[in-house]
Image (cartoon, one colour):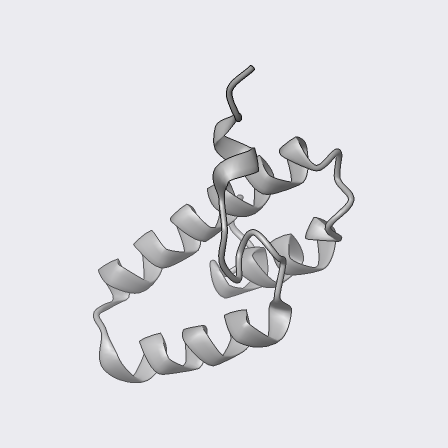
Length: 76
């Protein structure tokens, strides 16, 4: 059986590394356009959800998803 997309995801979003997210967001806020920041947040949110689904929610996605939502201005 092949791996799902969620099982193949790596990186700070897949690990739900909230500290890395904070560092990345701070850097983006200083160095890129609002549009690039928005894409980062949308892709990050999707990545966290896929990884959590593949791991049956065992990676503690809630905290990072809350941070992402706050960074998006609380807009779903």
